[in-house]
Length: 122
Image 1: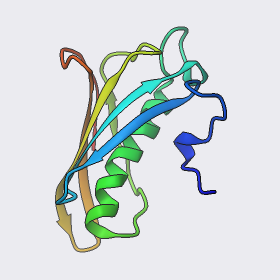
Image 2 (image 1 turned 120 degrees about the vertical axis):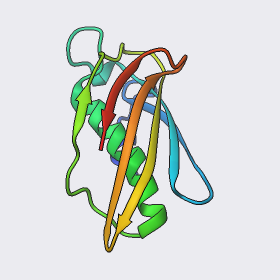
Image 3 (image 1 turned 45 degrees about the vertical axis):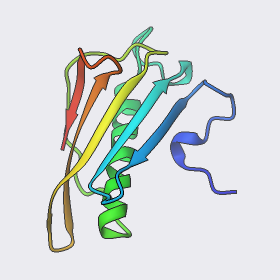
């Protein structure tokens, strides 16, 4: 019954297609994501809000693993190159530090080949 927001599209391959791998220590999550046509912003490219969603989902996985119940307080993203629809990107999220109840994280979105940096976030 429970569906995560990024998985709510009923048409297979139309929205977010992704898999996330969490390191046992919980301090790093790697997500392979392929944005589908429902996520289009500029023709042929993923909408920036869709990129923000998969970043938040990936770093949120780390935050949940190290701190339990969490909510995003601030998400800062530098968009560097558009993500073509249907391409595969690697979303690399990690815990940078813990300060009391606060979890500070960072993330990079790269092409699957690693040659294009699409976005960086904290």
